[in-house]
Every structure is written in structure tokens, then in C-alpha cells.
Length: 65
Image 1 (spheres, rainbow, N blue to C red):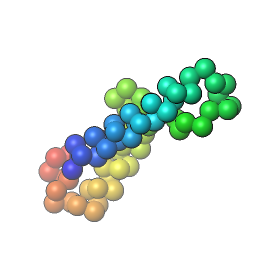
Image 2 (cartoon, one colour):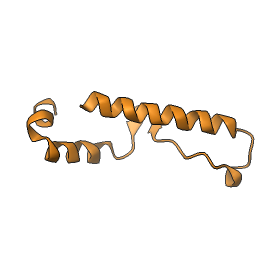
Image 3 (spheres, rainbow, N blue to C red):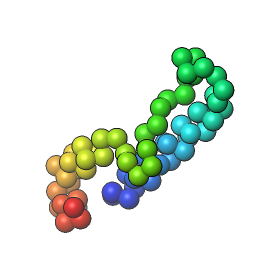
């Protein structure tokens, strides 16, 4: 499940990156593409997502943490 969540986030980030690439050269205040979800290996709110998964699925998540 953790791998699927990570892959989904990476997929979303790829789409956002393509949108940002199309808007390259446009002033920042006029861009409509969303910001980054992933900064290198750092994902925003990753610990919160894992905590929520551990609460919802303790038998599946906790052994892997």
C-alpha cells in the first residue's frame, strides 16, 4: 500500500511538472499550474499520510513501519 501511495504521488507530480513546463517563461503571478508535491525524495505531509493509514489499517501498515 505504501508503494502504491508513493507511485500515485509521483504520477500526480509528473502531471504537475508537465503543466509547469508548458508555462515556463510566464511570470509567476500569471501561472496556473499547481506547485510541487515532491521535492526530490521529500513528499509533503508524508508522515501524516502514513499515520492515517496506520490508524485505518493497523494490521497491514504497522508491521512495515
